Amino acid sequence: MQVSWHHTVRGAARGTPRRVLLTYFMIFHSFCGMIDPIALEVLAAVPEVAERYLGLVEAADGDPGAAAALTELADLVAGLVSEMERHRPLLTRCLAAVEAAAAHGEDDLVVGAFIDSLSPDELVVLRPWLGRRTVALLEEVDAEDAGC
Image (tube, rainbow, N blue to C red):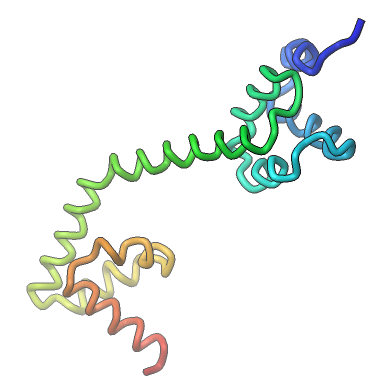
């Protein structure tokens, strides 16, 4: 009797975490060349997709391929975008308060307590959301940091 991957996972899953099983599956099949290289890259770069992908592996009784991995990645990204949208009203109000402080001439306060408290990466993400005065302050800080 031939034992399928599906049956192996179901039998082993009782005591073994699914992520561990997926790791073993990936190692075994990557040596055999049976997992699409793109799927391996996605799973290595974004382990959060692994649980969903393992469900597809079980359903397909083997590697469902790169398209399935990318589709699962798209579902994860869509969920992240949804979370961003959920926080948009609060973020808008927060940045409006910062802009109001900047508009009242509280430049040192805005720079020292707000802008300097955020990482450069966070400031890049927030820049399109910032008001005109806050952006001007950010540009002044950037120019000072650059030594201009």
